[in-house]
Image (tube, rainbow, N blue to C red; front, side, top):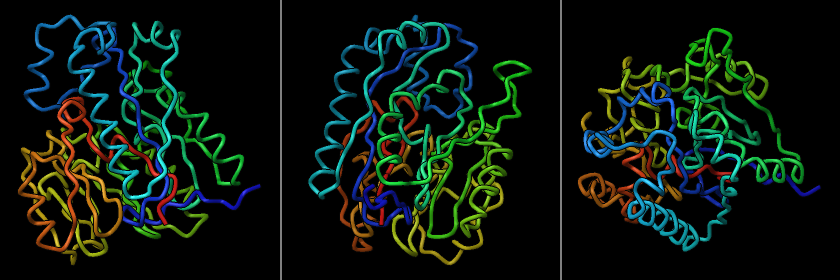
Length: 326
């Protein structure tokens, strides 16, 4: 057995190995399963207005945007590799997954949520949107290989309780976009769109065996994940939309230097950048006002146009999940 390389110490510890997502999405045929779209930008919603998407492949509906979408992820891969990061990719959807996805949808587009890594633990999440609940499957070969070869802890959040129907609220729901790691403290977002209190309780119970403090962060109802409102750039510096946090900044972060983002920019994923390390941050060029403040604090900014990814509700952090940040 290899020495366990699975370790995520913090959001900004040097990134050494990462899973980078693919660009596949089958729209749910049953549109009621895709109704919670309050987190999307107005432009994104307008793009779908009047378009027959039910049960169709994004590639079929928007072929030009699909090509650009795939290129965005390739550009991200190039930047990561420029900094010596090892990049692994999930497999593509099988024909069966595409076909079966015509009813409830099928996703292979944001790797952050189906699993997450805390310390030496790989944790499969429990996703609220029904069309995303099998999104971990294209990634599972990677997780199995990493866990079995290195001896990492490999666990899964209990599957959601759907005894009252697919929209039942009991969960537990716990998604990687809501999980931010800062040494022995883990922040968990809860807006009602993704993770819920039962998911937080499960994670608190599991991590208590390893000496972690788990802090629940209530979010406004149209904020999908915590990483849409809070980004830990380096020790003592964060990008934040305070208006999105119902109870304000968590106590342990109140003394940090902050770059503030207006609430209107949450839907455009302004906060969802990606630290490569404490001195380098990946950002969309649309948010030059954030970049200028990062540069003024000595941070190198790598720009990548991520327009298509952002239109689907996720950006750089959503598109990646670290296996090693130490």
